[in-house]
Image (cartoon, rainbow, N blue to C red; front, side, top):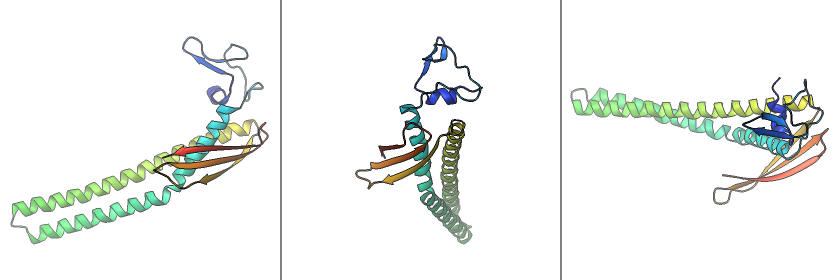
Length: 184
């Protein structure tokens, strides 16, 4: 069994190079089947659940701007490629003009590559954030903990934005939490 998912969120976790992962309560390696009866979910758990949900929310909010950037860069690349083609077509006798035309086409293709990389990077981050949330939710299901999150994004000041993360829990010792994060 993979104990690290349980122990990473537990306040009783001790990790060192000598013994590896051990429990602070027993000073032994973790031993349980599906759930640990002595798990202590507190600050580490709260921070982890808030950060995972906040990351997914931030990435989701950037979806529209990422797609706009993608299509804009594709359009600019397309215009450059067409422009380079017509420039080449009108100046087939000059070697210098052909080099310029191929340079313009190359820049257009580069724009396509940048557009593709932006979209690929967004998808990678989004999929990783969704997986982390799914993994956490699956873990919490074993302990019967349910939650709802609410995010309040304040106005950006000097590139730093304050985000208030409100969490409502069911079947956890804390019923509500509210934490403020500053992101840039």
